[in-house]
Image 1: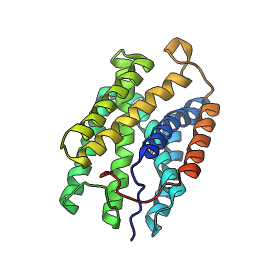
Image 2: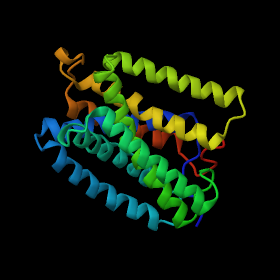
Image 3: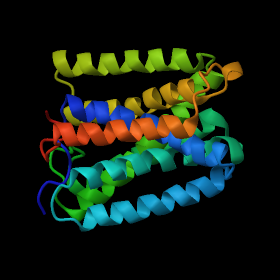
Image 4: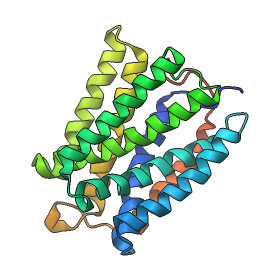
Amino acid sequence: MKNKVAAVTLSFWIIKILATTLGETGGDAVSIELGLGYERATLIFAAIFAVLVTAQMKARTFHPFLYWAVIVATTTVGTTMADFCDRSLGVGYIGGSLILGGLLATTLVAWWRACGTISVSIIATHTQEGFYWLAILLSNTLGTALGDFLADDGGAGFLGGTVIFAGALALVAAAWKFTGLSRAGLFWAAFILTRPFGATFGDLLDKAADQGGLEIDRITASAVFALLILALIVLTRPRAGAHGEA
């Protein structure tokens, strides 16, 4: 297969953050606004993810709309899955974060042992792609749990959580610019941190005022973010490339 992942550029990270925010508002819209609950919403989004990731893995070349549709699917199912674990199962934010962090670490270790690397500069075999999408799904789910933990249990609130995770992303960017740390490791650190950044920002927009949010309609916010993502894909024309080395 040819390389099937998007090149890492500034537009890549902008679309990724928009996708994570859409995942938060979209997940909340279905589970809370439509009253389906976390379990049923997770089943719906998991089915959508399964269909899209199957189409992605069967494709032989990079298709930007399909690629980003799978990313968005991981953020929506990640939102409701994390909320289901944290709240419905009663393990709490810290418990959910530890479980998901352990699963992600296990996936990355298994990937490294199977392929000899976790670099994502080239994803061109089914084995690599399977680990790649599993790691993305778990990282987006973990990011949701971390964002909720910091905003709620950590007492930072949605605005404070957004600022803290923005600062953490700035540190990762500085490490990429000024140090020789592993590019693959820094990529995954940034990929994980963009999720709670987008999640806390999404919560800031759509949660009730008495919870510290701006109480913007979830369905409207989700539609706006979806249109922004589509517009950026059209305007920037993402291409396959060195996904983690750039």
